[in-house]
Image (cartoon, rainbow, N blue to C red; front, side, top):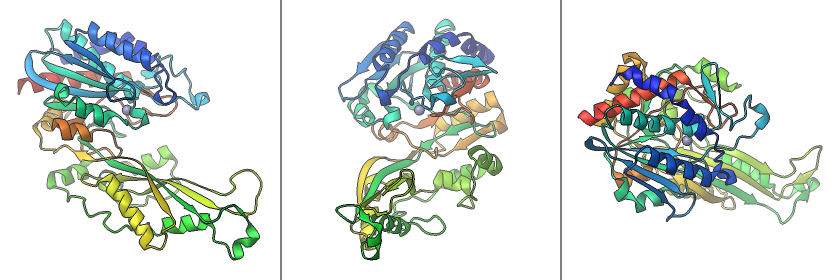
Length: 445
Ligand SMILES: [Zn+2]
């Protein structure tokens, strides 16, 4: 296999991707789901899959499963999703989100980075190997349609179909290059607990003159939130940090090696305040968080309305580390509120995902690193123990006992979920070369 041939092949077969990008598969609006599931099923069959199934038995949008037999009896499982985020605000797009356009060496379209381009780069490789001596090893695909809704059914599908999904290693979505154009090999995800805090202090909003004697739901909520949070960003909840496992040396060293450009990050997001930590990289990877996502109470319209609000609501999330249980964390927070004298501030749990990390010394991780060095160069690789964000990977680890690695084709300016989502053609072709190289290397060992 000529490595650069694979890159050229990917670029020459772009029409394949453009077709897929045109299908407006927005799960939040229940748009285009049947169409895209049919397209995928048809495409898997066309590529010569030994088995293609539409799983519907666990509810929600169907999961498309496909299996390809290769020359060696080793199997890699790919996780992808066919749904995309809504496109709004439409006026901030410089192209039509569902009419992909190529300009200045980039492809613009909704989903091209998250996560349609990645799936197509994987499918294009099958096409390449079909025309060049056959697939080096077995491949399986798990393509779900509710990732942008928080993957409410994935755990059930993985559990129910664990026999069919059985494989030796798994490649996740969401990979690519960082701000310094280093190719990331990410080996885990943070967990999350999402919940609401609500407090009610009266049966009705009151005239604000009564603030002399009547308690105020907004103050009450703000004070309760404040009691959970220290001056240096620490989370003041008994037991919150107890289950976190100490970092091993390899992981600690990997975190220390990650490059982080504070200036660039501050400029990119227009941050107006200093960082709340002295060590942003370390906390990004190995710091749990507690975040107010939104606050609402009382009158929020134009002009004025002098009232004491009867109720107040905070939308919250915590990003969690391996071994922290989202439901337990929520219970600890409720217990702390009661202990702090806020027994009327009620927590309701929305959803949660557990964190995980694949051991960095796992042979599959090492093979990713070696294969990437051959394509990108020794000093352009970044090994990241886990993403700062989450995803429904935990069940795959639990049921399939596979190492999971995230590698792909996006870059720091790809703008997933944002207007003008894009990928660079160069990353697409190099990413395809990398993946082909990995499959060949992995099939040999
Ligand atoms: Zn995604």
